[in-house]
Image 1 (cartoon, helix red, strand yellow):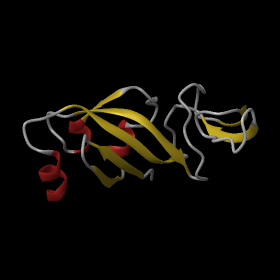
Image 2 (cartoon, one colour; image 1 turned 90 degrees about the horizontal axis):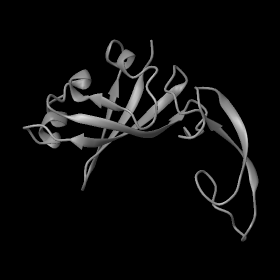
Image 3 (cartoon, one colour; image 1 turned 180 degrees about the vertical axis):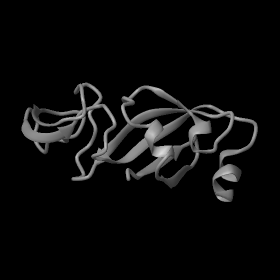
Length: 125
């Protein structure tokens, strides 16, 4: 059974929600940047965009790394590494941009709002 923790962000507030089978099956194979219909998790009228996530080891999903594999990259200042000194680079582990069974958390933002407020829909479930 695959279970994901979803962090849904609106302009002013974020909401956390855990989904299991069969709802989680709709996220498998999706990539960072793709949109998902809110009907999948009970948010009718909403469209959610995948912005990132983490895997079971805590490594972040990197948008420019294809697939779902884990890989060590030599990175400088930017995504996933903040250099303590100017010009410093380090090797860091990242997971690819595709959501798989190894993904634990998925970060989403509201792309299109529905008729009811998000807080009302998520408080009921």
